[in-house]
Length: 475
Image (cartoon, rainbow, N blue to C red):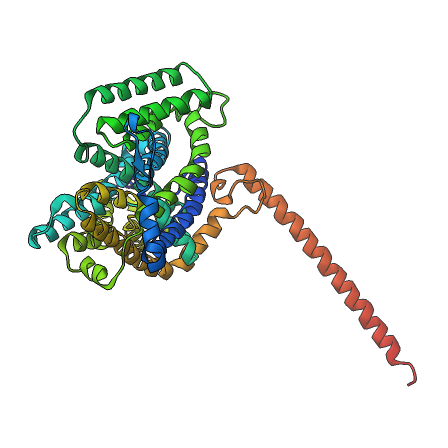
């Protein structure tokens, strides 16, 4: 008696659909450029803060106050960058999350299980590592959330600097990880770093969000309507005691990210396309410029590896992130009986997990919130974020370079388009028309080569005939 064939298991990190692949490529292209600018801004901040002739100027600039005090918005430039500019960053994060939930990988619970489990483990394990280090070392546990964040832009900048890339499945996994990571970071900021609430201002912010939602659903268009309203919502949210970036997330989540009939892009995709360059190219680099400038004297560097708070951040990013994401992915595969894509191997997952240990923008923000009353410790924690991110980047570079040749071959296969129809051949293997086109192309090439061979043969015969006729002539 023959046994029935077993059903093939679900693929882990399988090939993306063509529309999803194109969306991921476009999104990551902008993030890569922004990541390079972010890297340059961080280097500029460190130089500005550590060159003796410039250090005093750096402190003066980032502590310069501007804004209407009557509205409670007389803030330093550093404060404007953290609460104002990062609201733009979180607005884009909100749109990304909405799109993933309604049109991306997260819309299917089975497909969403992997990145969600990996992201949750990738946040829980670093928090646990930090907490253990500080409980054992008698340090402050207030910074438990600092090493939980992943900076997708900085991670992509590292890839750009070392001159390597990732196959589309790994790029999508990293992007989805970062989106889920941002969601939980938003929740952490909202729940654990909310100061005394001003219910009048909070009520006004909620009313503004309801109006924002109503205008969107009514089909009202025009930036001159939404931008002033968004500024009012942001100002009320800031004065309510809830971190102002939450306003950006809430507005991003309200945008429609599904396409209506006849639409090339949904409103959410269109607005994200317009705002993402502003976020990646201006908002986040300026935040880095005003937040990453910390003293890196010999004593400060020594503190990073001896003080429990800073050591917990470094170990959380380098060890906790890698172990958490890799372990979460393995557990998801183990308990869902999913098979890893045959083009990839578990070392590839380990490399991406280590790359996710680069926690820069949100980690710096949470560090400022967690130790707001201690300026010295805040700077030391920021230095730990920088060192931890640098160490994670170095580990990831080594692991990725070991597989670079394999990645390049996979990317070449993904981009190959022999019939020049604008669709990679790998997505047309089940299309009979593709194979007919390729047959015609090969037949034309075969005919061309036959003609060349015949012409060459005729030329050789003519040359041989002329040589033999000349051989009988007298010298």
